[in-house]
Image (cartoon, rainbow, N blue to C red):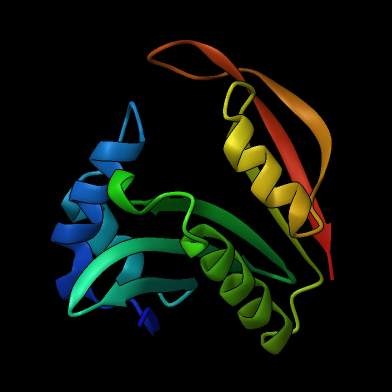
Length: 145
């Protein structure tokens, strides 16, 4: 059974390994640990049998939430873990009285775009050449709560 838990600094090493599977430019373990310790960050892991399968984190800035990263192990994609994590972020945002959530996603990442749309996010802009390795535009998406 998958459990959603608050991410803690000791999870950073495994979170980094998952990001390395998921992203061309993953955050370092130190950066993830620092982000989890930031009082403005809301972070969760999806865990099964004491193994982290995915994670999600966002920053709470004023009355907005900026989703920084959502990543799921390759071996556990398309199992609903991403949806669980997005739902948990939305619930946490509502509990924190956040008015809206935003994120950037690669134009080519159709699976993530579909996940976000399924959870009520809409595309509202483009950040030209936002991503590197390869260079690609980022779609800015919002969900208003």
